[in-house]
Amino acid sequence: MRILMIAIICLLSFSCTNKYKNLANTAEDYQVIPKPQKLDMLTGKFLVDGNTKIVGSEVLKNEGEFLAGMLSAATGNSINFYSEGSGNITLKLDDAIKNEEGYSLNVTFDKIEISGKTTKGVFYGIQTLRQLMPASIESANGDIKELTIPAVSIADNPRFKYRGMHLDVARHFFPVDFVKKYIDLIAMHKMNTFHWHLTEDQGWRIEIKKYPKLTEVGAWRNGTIVGHHPGTDNDQKKYGGFYTQEDIKDIVAYATKKHVTVIPEIELPGHSSSAIAAYPYLSCFPEEPTKVSHDMGSIKGKEIQATGTPKIVQETWGVFDDVYCAGKDETFTFLQDVLDEVILLFPSEYIHIGGDECPKENWKRCPSCQARIKAEGLHDEHELQSYFITRIEKYLNTKGKQIIGWDEILEGGLAPNATVMSWRGTKGGIEAAKQKHDVIMSPNHSCYFDHYQVKTKDEKAKEPLSIGGNTTVADVYTYEPMPSELNKEEQKYVLGAQANVWTEYMKTTDYVEYMILPRMTALSEVVWSSKNNRDWEDFSTRLNTFKDRLDALELNYAKHTFGK
Image 1 (cartoon, rainbow, N blue to C red):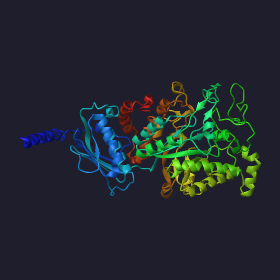
Image 2: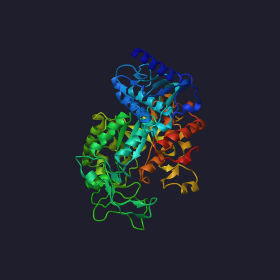
Image 3: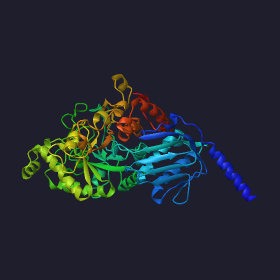
Image 4: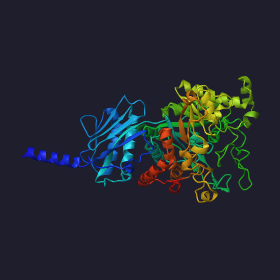
C-alpha cells in the first residue's frame, strides 16, 4: 500500500508539472531590460512551487541563496540552495562562455539552467530570470500561488566592461540603508560600478582616524543656501553627517555580494574646502578667511565669508579658489595618510581622485607653489596640477591602485597610468584614448542626472528644483558611448560609460530616486546591449512593463518621462 501511495503522488506531481509543458508564451512575457544579445522564445512554463530546489557548486552559494530568497519571498514556499545533490534549478560555471560577465539562461517546463563564465555572470542570469517573472514578486509576501516562468533560451553578455552610477553624498548626505538600496538598483540593472563621491567643499563624509577633524569639523556646514544658486537666503541650519569606517566596510561587503565594485572619490586638488576648514595648513593661505569664488554672486548683497574663524565648510555651491597647496610637502603627507586608510577600506582597483575645476589663482600668488614650479622645471600652474596628480598617482601605484580623474587631468600633461572620466562632453575622452589611456565616458549632455528630465520652460516650472539643463530619457537612450572619431585600435580604450548624480538640489532619497529613474534604466541598455540591438520604440514598450516593477518596489520614479 505504501508503494502504491508513493506511485500515485509521483504520478500526480508529474501530471501537474506536465500541464505546463505546452503552454504558449507571447512577446509580452519577455520584456527584459537591458535587452539580451540573443533571446529565443520557447513553448512551456516552469512552475515555482514547494518542490523547487536550487543546486550548484559551493562557490555559487551567494548567488544561489539570493535566488532562493527571492523565490521563497514571492511564493511563501521554503526554497533552498544546495551545494550537492540534484534539483530543477541548476547554477553552474561554464568556461565555454567567453565573456567574463556573460551568461546563458535556459528555461523549459521542467528545469532551469543558469550558466556563467564567472559567478558574476550567473548573478546576471538570475537578474534576467527575475524580469521574466511578474513584477509582483518584488512586493509579494508569499502570496503568489502560481508563479511561472516562460520557457526561453538566452545567450547574453555586456558590450562594455565599465557600467557605472555615481552618487554625490557630499552636497547632501544619505544614510547607509539608502546607499545599499542604490547598490541594489545598480545590480538589478546589470551595472557593475558604484562611484561614491565622498568629499567636497560642502562636506567630508568618510572617517579618517588619523585626522579626526575631517569629520568633527569638515563633515558639517553651518547653513545652506535657499533656492537656486546663488540663493535668496541661507537657512542657517547646521547640516552634515559621515560614514564611519565600519559603515564603509558594511557597504562594500554588501556591494560585493551584488557584484558591484565601489570606487571611492577623494577630491583633489580642488573642491577641498571641507578638508581645509578642518586643517587650514592645507591651504596656500591659512590665515585668509574663506570666500566664495568671484563668480558665485552674493546673498542679500553680502559676500559670504567666514566670521570668527579663518576657514569654513562651504554653504553654497560652485567652484572655490581655496584649494590644496601644491607647494607644501605637508599637503602630500596629509593626502597620502588619507589614501592609506581609504585603500584599506576599498578593495577596488581604482581610486577616483577628482582633479576637476581647480582654480589656479591662489597657486599664482603662493610663494610655495611658485617655488615648486621653479624647482620642478614646470612652465605654469597647469603643469603644476599635472605634477600634483602625477605625484598622487605614483604613490597609489606603489600601493597597487590605479587612478581615475575627471578630464581636467589632461591639462598640463596626463599622468602616466591615469584613466580619464570625460564629463565636459566627449573631447577629453577622445583625446585620452588617442593617447592610449583608458576612458570612461560621462558627458554632461547625456549622463548628468541632475539635469531636468523635460525640455520646455513650462515643463521645468512643474518639476522639483534642479541645477538646470535638460536630459530626457530619450537623450540618455540615444547616446552612443563609442566616439566615431576613434579608430578600431583607439576604441579599445573606451571602457564604458557612467551617469553622474550631483546632489546640490537633491535633499532627500525620494528625490534621488526621482532623478535617476527611469534614466538609469535607459543607460543600462546603452552600456549592456549591442549598438545594433537598440531601438527606441522597442525599448519604450519594454520600459512601460518595467515601470510595474518600479511600482512594486515602491520607488519614486519620474512617471511623466515615459515615452519622451
